[in-house]
Length: 142
Image (spheres, rainbow, N blue to C red):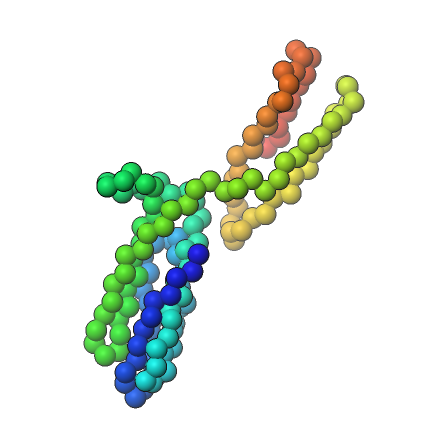
C-alpha cells in the first residue's frame, strides 16, 4: 500500500530531503529531490512484516504505528503519524496427498521467504477424517 506526501519547493534551488522514519513497517526513499518551483510526491509504502498487535483506545482495532519527519530546507518541518493494520496472510495454497498403507510419504512444500533473514513458519496439519490408531503423522523440523 503506497501513499504520497505532496511537497512543494517554492525556491529557486533544488531541495534534497532526507526523511526520518520511525516504525519498521514503512519504507521511504533514503533521499528525495524536489526541483525548483515544483511539487513532488514522496512515496510512503506500508510494508508490514508482522500482523499488527497495538490497540487504539477508541475502537479496539489493531494497528502498527510510526512517524515520518521531514525537515525542509526553507526552515519548516512536517510531521506525519503513520498507522496501518495487517491481518493474517491469505492461504497461498492447499497441499493434498494420498499414499498407500505402510509406505512412508515425504511431501515437500515450497515457501517464499520475503525477508533477507531466516524465518520460522507455523505449519498446520488438518485431518479431514479421524485416522485409525495405526496412523502416525510426523512433521519434521517442527
